[in-house]
Amino acid sequence: MAKIRDHEIEPDARPAARAGTVRIGEDLVVNRMGFGAMRLCGPGIWGWPENRENALQVLRRAVELGVNFIDTADAYGPEVNEEQIAQALHPYPHDLVIATKGGSVRPGPGQWLRDCRPERLKACAHASLKRLKVDRIALYQLHAVDTNVPFADQVGALVDLSREGVVEHIGLSNVSFAQLVEATKIARIASVQNMYNIHNRGENDRIIDFCDQNGIAFIPYFPLGAGELADDTELQVVSKAHGANMFQIGLAWLLARSPMMLPIPGTSSLEHLEENVAAADIQFSQEDRVRLGLEQPVSAHHGVHDER
Image (cartoon, rainbow, N blue to C red):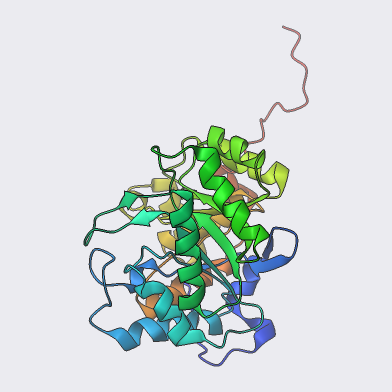
């Protein structure tokens, strides 16, 4: 199993950097192995976990490993996750990008509702700004589309926040292809964050192709699809060949799927964090890529004209 063993790492050798970089908007460049901080909250993504110090240690270790993109939301906790990030990492490293989201409402553990009225989105952004202790939110994402509010008004609120200097870049989460296209007519969209992994793709393949063509970062959440990887025979073969576990191969698959891909595997375990980041070292052979559906097999009769 691929692991990172050194606990003192030189900046130019940080493992997350081996995944390469992706540009968010015109001016933010981050390593393509990010971290999703949601799982540092308590059960039901509610409150602090029992071991508070461990959550802070995981965040600090992620940065030590070269992660310079951390994803969060005001709904995680709620509010707790943003507070954890500030407590663990502020003052922030100069290259760290913290992305947060607004628009979700949390009545209780495991409960998720939506309220994306423009006035509420703006209030949420200002509150996140204070919790994160930043002058401007580098990437602010609409957490989910509210069907009770015109979509153009929801995106428009983020445009207003950008004009006010509260938000630097605008992102979307949990959107359809049609919504993404509509949003690009209203604002410069820097990122899309949808659920996506090797076994859960659907319309997102079309969205990723659009992102590739338009320089939009694609941030897959639930990138490991844990329950489905264990039964994948091809993943088992490739993972054995690389001496890696299937979750690492699943992350490497995402990195190979698109140059605009920015995986954000989340965990509350230091061990799993290091395993996830180590996936940045995995390079697939052409045979691997064919097995994993990243390339079509070369026909044995390629280039031969059959006149029968």
